[in-house]
Image (tube, rainbow, N blue to C red; front, side, top):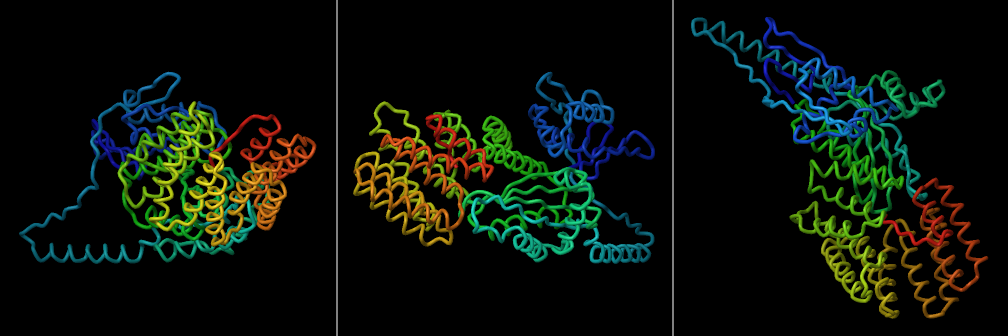
Length: 543
């Protein structure tokens, strides 16, 4: 982006300020971090940008004092004038000077008619030079990219192949989709190993580490990734390390292959051609970065921070349905149910499209889930009927798109509703149908939720032997894939059964096993869930 005000012209792509009242024009350089602060303020000049937002975006990987931001603001004012940025005490800063956004300058050749032949020859030579420059130096202007091994944060063994094979797939796909140079996997692994042997091991996520890695590999861009989520509902978090500092984002996908292809496509679009960043593109990048940070905060159970980040993302992209969904989940997890449901209902009003159909499906399913698990109304039966309407709509959307996973989820929730209504035969039919869908997936452990519900139906009918059989099946499937969350759900469901039977010793035994598994997985959500069982505090979390 380039813009002008007064006698100054600023090029945010090059990080330069041109003073037009001097002859020749004086050119001033903008320091990298200060440039990032300026980019954010100009792109968001219609609002106040909080200090914390700026610190999180520009100095994400470094523990810094607020003084570094104050210094960057001072540098901007020294370069561009003291009245360009207004300070809002205890809140943040806002760019307040009107600017003229400039389009790329058009280069016109001046032809003197007096010398038409000479002019023609000059133009021909220049054209040839430009052609040669484009064809032979384009690759040198494009950044060289290195992918690090993917961090596998999936709580199962089905994705053990992802770190290296996924890294290789990213490298190969990006080569096919763009002209970008990509480091060989073996070269990256060797460079990482050498750095780990050095004294930088303890700084393996700090800026010094990535700077050294860039030097070792002779690359401009290092891509760090982490895979998390659930089968058929994955998140691929990425951080782009370059001279401009780290930039974050997240890709949502049903499977690993789609996630890797989508990330390669994003990189090819972002770096594969030399185009200037427009304000719209910058807003989108900012929203995706805020969204990615919000998801990270959500996974750490820091719901207040997540709420602030998701709301920041929605300032720039109010129709970002994934951010609305995560915001609703964060609100629900701190028991602000009315706000959560109102937000999800608002998502259903946003114009339907290919991209939003899946989110509309999720919104219907989540509203039904919240009504089932967080009773609010005085008339519980009426509330369950409303929940059933939303789940039925989710089922209809899933069936229309042949989304087997969400068909199974819808069937499970319908089975749960029928169990709560005391209609055990109908509940069993829904759950057995859900099991059939789950059996068609590569990951078997999706079956555990339906098996737990079938066990609860058996308990309600005082068929304890049948309940234990279902629990045994569920645990066998969870153990087979070493899926820690599913192991914990099965153990806590058994603990609930024995506590209801006044067999507290057995109940505690199962719950302690669940707590041990939660600590092994080092998951704040799982640990909190098991600790809530011991405290006898009702806790529900939206995954």
